[in-house]
Length: 422
Image (tube, rainbow, N blue to C red; front, top):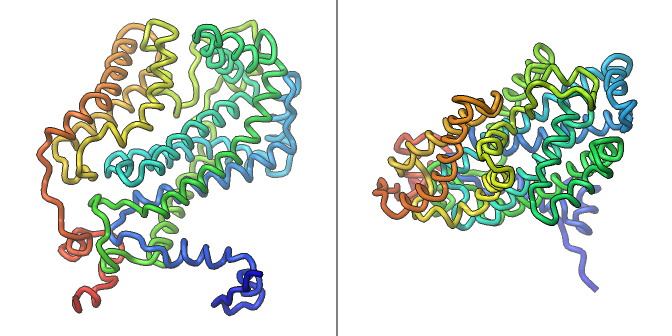
């Protein structure tokens, strides 16, 4: 028979539970004493911000589901009832609707930070791939949620996007029929999307737990892109990183509150306040803003199947970055040539997003095609070639050496005495 392990907690209830199920010991180890590189900056807070936004989305979505009716003749009116008749329903819905946008903002910053500092490189390949899967599940969840209000843009967005699967030979039409639950977007489609939109956030939560577990196995990256060489290069997660992340979360939530209370419909589309009408097609069908770069890629290719492959390929391509990037240096701080191309990629993503919001004609179609070409050229050609040819700047000997010489980062004075003794 296994022996009950003694624990160190003063609270007798916590001590009793932990001796039988060491969950508090695990939390203490992973979120109190967990060593973090001492030079991480505020960009590292966006992972925590994204996690908090996920919790907010699940909580508000649960309350909205209590009042929502997933029927084509009732869905639009049930949303209006939530806004007008349910106590604080307007607040819950606006937090949920704007929370989706803020969630994507946090995740996009989190992803571009990883791209800039090379957080996808060994030994963090599994961590990065899990992140790409999280992004895909996020996109699917957000798309299905956008359909639920059953407004004009919801209905026609669902019609256009689900129709894309018909481009795949042989299996395409059966997939579309399965998604629709019939021969057009109708009540079975709405029921399917509501059920999946309710389920997928919990799948997302499980993936985030795996993502965090993978992070704690290989450790956090840092702006220098070099591994800690000892205790002098790290600080405990608490209080240093918790305070930094807490401050960043508060600032982010203030910005979030500005949108919720002062411009709640700024990131939405006015056509979604018109009830869905299958007989009237909107003049210009556009998805939510966070899908626009991929929507631009979809429309940039004149062939339907080619456009679908480009759109899905642009996301799947990200999973292969650890092997496409041949450079032995992680951080762009020491890659002067690639750093310039990184910012070109960021600008390209913004241009693609704007092009996706415009009609697919004239100069905007040409711009979308150039932007799509550069996106794939960047990852498939530039990244591998520069990894072999670029002359990188010399790396510092250690994180602590860089910090104590004025490199910045959190807790610059922490562990200064051990360094002096060394």
